[in-house]
Image (cartoon, rainbow, N blue to C red; front, side, top):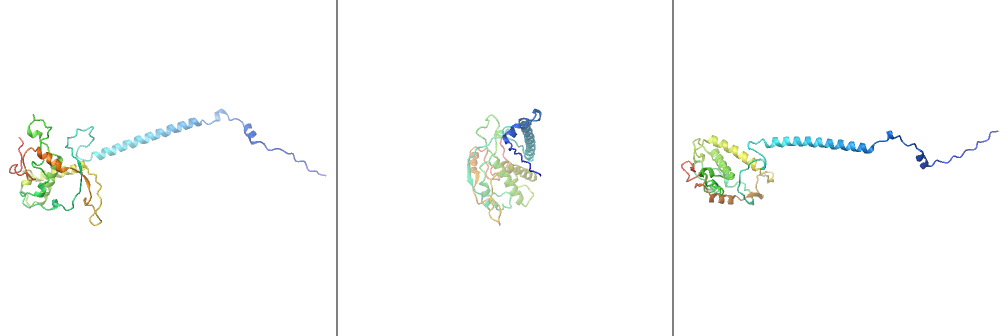
Length: 254
């Protein structure tokens, strides 16, 4: 007769005892965690440094190309000798669309325009600074603020555009017109990019678009500049046609 074999009771093992009973890993099989983290950090920093260096080189090349596309010499005040300027206070100004300056000039090139002539002081903007060396000749001490040189070029281009005769007229100042006009185009292009007026102009409306007027903008005190320059003018000559400075507007400074 078969009899059931008594089941032998085996107690469950204690998890702590099982862990305690595990063999210690061999020293050569242990992972050097600290060393791995250190190597990873070094690789990361080296990679970041190389990336930053390459980015810096490419950015420098880009800036160099961007600043050498103009014909004028560009740079910072620290590495280039900058010409002096007259300090002016900032004021709020507003451009006017279709101002009197938009009207056509007289066909006769020897006729003055009072509206335009108000832009320049007596002496056309040529003056002798208070800091000038009195031991030098008068001609070597005379200077002109860029604003008046720019206005002179703008006036010349305007009169040359509207004139109906190729013959020299008073606004040409006795110079070859084609050469003078070419100089003024070149000079004004560089003057605008050098000044780089960064005023953010909003659109007037969908029909007219961007006219540059109808809002206040930062300006410099032009009237003060005129008064300072006129008070130390190098000679007397009125208006853009330089009346009082010779038959062709030529000036002898001596």
